[in-house]
Image (tube, rainbow, N blue to C red; front, side, top):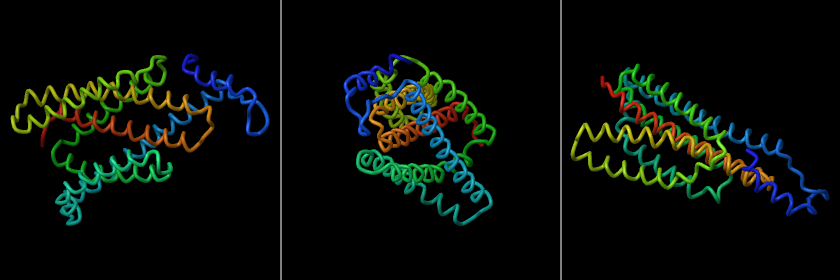
Length: 255
């Protein structure tokens, strides 16, 4: 990973005569490794917390639907409202990244996870439980492998972002067209491409989090690092959830 630290080394050389406490700036590679591992781990933990909030919320609503709870059915009737609110929260999160503090962004992330749980509750009414479990386990394995690769590789994987974004836009457009075509072959193709895109996105986003932390660690600004951590958590959460949905569609046995 030494070549990833070129920016830190340049920073130290350019600031040899300055330190706010009256000494030289000295951040060793071990210090940087500690910061990077801590913040990447923080992004992962926040992602896991978000998934837990989504899973628990979705399960509670699903059990309410099964038992005939009127509140659960009220939530189901307001499905599209919650879906719109999800989109609004994500756009709001993006718009406030540079303005809001990290605590506000964390609350928005948890709110999004909760709203996602409300809308995800319908999956239990569509797919058999064993299919959902299998899709989750498959997603977990792929996520773990690609996250490790994205963290350890010395290559800058963010260069693949434009290609991935183009692919994502393409499958969204094809999905919209297929709403009218209702072609099962096209739906299968979309699901396969979706799995490929979001599998690669996992490695790219973990790599991006690490690189951003390396770039800003020398500034020793905890608020910037906290923002990188929670923004990374949202990106990884979205990668995990989308990969899960596409794998679920591939396994696709309906009740």
